[in-house]
Amino acid sequence: MKTVSILGATGSVGTSTLDIVERHPDLYRVAALTAANNVNALADAAVRTRASLAVVADDTRYAELKERLAGSDCRVASGPEGLREAAAGEADWVMAAIVGCAGLEPVMAAVSAGKTVALANKEALVTAGALMTDAASRSGGIILPVDSEHNAIFQCLGTRNCETVRRLVLTASGGPFRTWSAVAMADATPKQAVAHPNWSMGAKISIDSATMMNKGLELIEAHHLFGLPSDRIDVMVHPQSVIHSMVEFIDGSILAQMGSPDMRIPIAHTLAYPARVESGAERLDLIRFGQLTFEEPDEARFPALRLAREALEAGGNAAIVLNAANEVAVAAFLAGRISFGEIAKMAEEALASRPNTSPASIEDVIAIDAVARRQAQTNLEGAAA
Image (cartoon, rainbow, N blue to C red; front, top):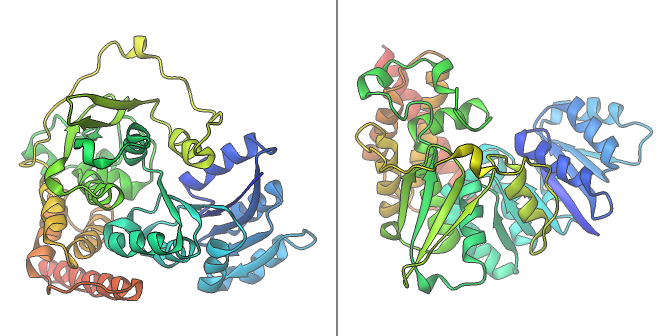
C-alpha cells in the first residue's frame, strides 16, 4: 500500500487525485491533505479518506479546522510549518498541487526529503527549475510530471536516454482565440478568454491558455524536466487535444501519447508509476474525432510564446520575472483594469527592465518574485494614471 499526501487537496488537481485514491482504497492510504483556506472541503476529504493530518495554510482558520475535525483521529496543523510537515512527512508519494509561489517551499521540502513528487505546481520548475532538479539529485527524490504535456513526453520517453531524442513537441489546443485576428483578440472579454474549448480549468490557467503563455511556461518546464535546450523543444497547435505531446527520435521515429482531455489520466500515471491503475476517465474514441489536425503557432498573434523562449534562453531571473509579471497582468485583466492585448505587453516590459540576477536558493526565488510583482503593480498603476 502506497502512502500519499496531497498538497492543494481542494483544487481541481487535488480533487481529481482524491477521486483516483478513493477508487482504490486497497492501494493507497492518505497521510496528509492540505488546503489554502477551504476548511469545509478539507475537513470533508480528511474524514472520507481517514487522513492522518490535515493542514490549512491560513493560520487564522486553524481553530475552525480543529473544530470541524473534533472527534476524528486526524491531527490538525496550519501555516508554513504544517505545509512542510505534510510535504516531508511519512508519505511515499506527494502530489504538489499548491498554486503559485506559495507551493515552492513545500515542493522543495518534499524533493529534499527524497519523496516521489507528482508535480502539478508549474511555478516550481518555471521559477526554480535548477534548484529543484539539483535537490532531487542530491536526495534521491523523483519528480514525476503531472501536466498532461510533460506527462505525455515522460510516457513516450520511457527508459530511453535523451541523447537519442531529436526534439520534444509540446502540443497546444490554441485556446479560445486560435482563429481570432489580433485586432479582435485585443478587445476580448474575460468571459470569452476563460471559455476554453477542451479543458475545464480555473480562471488564471484559462487566461494563460488564451494568451498561450501557459504553453510558453511549459516550454521552460520541459527544459528543466528533460534537460534539452530551447532549440530542441517545439510547440505545435493541435486543436482536438487528443495527442498530448510527442517525442521525435534521431532515427526519425515519433512517439505520441493520446488520451481524453481529463487530468485524471496523467495523475493516475504518476500515482501508480511504474504500474497502471483505472483513472475513471472516459475512454478515447478516435472514430468520433474522425481526424486530428496540426498548425504552426502564430507568435505574432501570441507573443507570450516568444517571450517565454527568450526568458528560458536568457536564464538568471528572467523566468521568475516573466511569471510574476504575467500573474499580475492576468489578475488585472480579470478585474477589468487592462485589455487582453496588454497582458503580454506587461510581461515584455518586465523582461526588458529586469535587473540580471540569479537565485541561489528558494528564498532568493521568492524575493525576486516579490520584487517583480511590486514593479509590475507599479507599472500598472503608472499606466492607469
